[in-house]
Image (cartoon, rainbow, N blue to C red; front, side, top):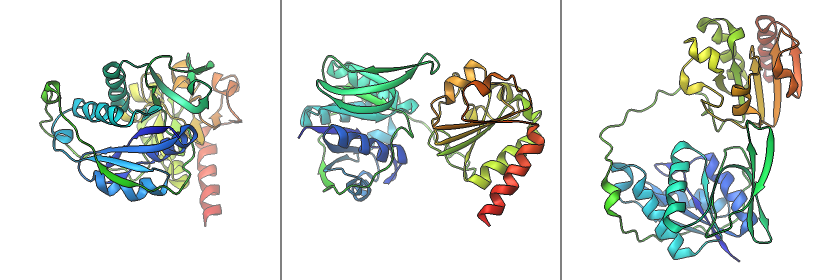
Length: 320
């Protein structure tokens, strides 16, 4: 059976959820071979093996932390040359897409980004994408070289599967370009205690209708009751009510959670482009003609200042 490379997103050996989703997709195409780089790479083997990885190629060189992107591309190129895989799967983070694009160029292959599904085809992997602000769904395949595909988080379930998870050292020769951009400092991001926006199973977002930064406490309370991440529309971010890092939309982050709750968001195309692939969409808006109601699964016509607190109370009551 053909092998499929999966680029591992981890922090000091703790594997992030999108990588486990990639392993589910990789098993549809062949036998997953994970590539873990940087400090703690070998510690990922247990988790990866529990989710179907037959092998884990590791390299813990300091270059992955000291320099940007290129050392990781060098390592993935070495892995491709060693394994001759049927495909390379990478999570669709900002860094993941840059790594994937550089790798595809290096190995002379085609690239597909932001896939929402991957399946086996007669002539290789077939990727499903949601395009043109999620107005169309396309199916594509790479016609030359080893397909390099980036996949959006929450596109596949995390499914445990028995894999050997055998650890093998990956031999990497770093290119001259690897040391071209050096990391000079790092600052830890302050944790909110909530899930990361692009990986969250539930997202609660607020828009212009929230009518002020102080009122985002209502959105946060609902999100916390559901164990959800907090998002914001561009209008709310531009008004300074919530940080840009939480913006959902074409010029912000793209999310695809199991449940998306939009409160006080009109549904402009810019916002819809960032959340339209959510599995279930709920909108709360007092304007029954708001465009957001065109794509929702459930719509509540009402004042969010009445609806959201009641919803939060009901969720907390059921949890209690």
